[in-house]
Image: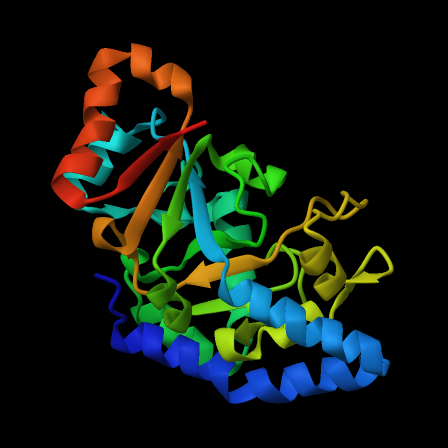
Length: 260
């Protein structure tokens, strides 16, 4: 069950305190016409019917076991700090870059240093995306993280923050809570508003900065009880040993299995 710690509550509150003001500023700067305001409202309604999804490679090796075995044993998905391979330890470039991205994500203020210094690795966010397309292979950038897509319960939205791009690419004032997701929708990408992509049901094309999606940063962990569905490659049905592990997700934890 997704519950947040005191440290995570502080991170979430730091975003929540600024979120509405940020969204209002973005919408004001957008200078939307009447028809565009209507589209923004419709896109926000559409996102209410959308799900947060997380892609993983369940066959990947983590220390002395595969991710699928770790998931079944621990009962939650590990975050990028926990599962990352950092051969340089705290001096590893990837590790330092991730910490700096999260420092920016939650405000990059002095008091954040104290919060971070007291946080356990398990308290770091899990990263997903808002899937407004509802197709197992949509949001193509997520395939980089694996071909297994977990669909999460809507309740996790209240413990998540959202950005209009990958969190490596955003400014610190581009982070919102769910109630203010219109701040994301009023953000422009490739000369178009996000609400246009959502309403038309299309993905934005890549830019020089990278590939794009509406990212979700989930605090409180993603447990098996938070997952409603797993999309998996149909070829897995012929790998009987591995498929038996997927079936345990369904039989023991109520996760609906859907092949593609």
